Image (cartoon, rainbow, N blue to C red; front, side, top):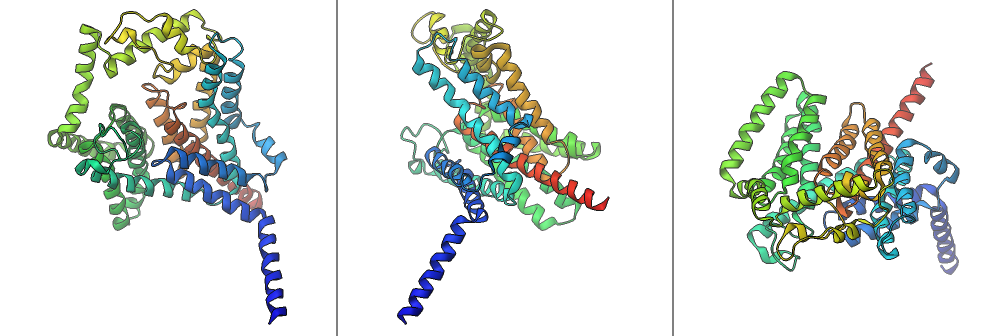
Length: 430
């Protein structure tokens, strides 16, 4: 028995060692940590960062360095790297303290993970699990949001100020729910065309659950502006004009019904006008008023150094220099983020930075030309980031920035993988 046990132990150890050395095993583990990263993103910043780090560690043992370096030459991978390098080089001509300069580099570093995701999911066949994990995680968060709306003490936020928010904030939550709800439009239409009504009905119910939460619990004003744009993009790409007219009428009717039934929705929309009036007449630091103040001043900073900007981390110092008034006034606010992605880049790196930023967006939009669910998800992630970045620096923000990096990286890798497969089929056929 002892000899048999020893033999069994040796065989088990040998199998474990072979598996440890197997690239396939490391690839599976990397996929698992990628799934855990996206599943934890709606709930925890720390967990998402930890799982992402573990994903990168698991990439090392089976990484084909030559193939990876070759993949970095593609514009879709090179452009994000260029923005990070620009942020590093921009520290040279900045007048900010060195701590502030390197701190301002940090929001761009996540873009270095995007080429890694493109490379990995070009080779992995499990990219669809990333999107499923994110959808399921957001659906669970929606349930939790309703519970917190009725039982506020369940929230993990100590201030209890944001209605229906279990973790993070209403802007992040609205971004997630809007992305999931609009992304479901493609599979719903495809299922209806295939007459698979039960499955289509299930996805319709899920999409509506996100919209109902945003209508009756909490929604960001950014989402109110961008969701119609996202639906418009879908309609132009995937629907006939007759279908567009019918669906538009249904959506308008649904929006009107939600408007009448939801005091929370009316309150959110009404703040647009009240915020603007209070800012113009009294100079109050309302949400909209502060953005207008930040944008006005940032345009002035950009005009002072239009080519290469003021350098990395210079924004807060520039706002301190032009601070006027005191107390409860918008003009007295000092900030390191002008709440607009273009202006955030323009102030620090000028026209050079704007060119690199727009190159990233354009190249990634072009990557997702074509028909299919993965193309639609990737396109939607880019479109959402572009338009929400009119009101926030969402490419540099942690939550929205990682939504972009993961969404584009995974979907982009899957698109490239599919193109390679089609090319091989074409070569075999010829």
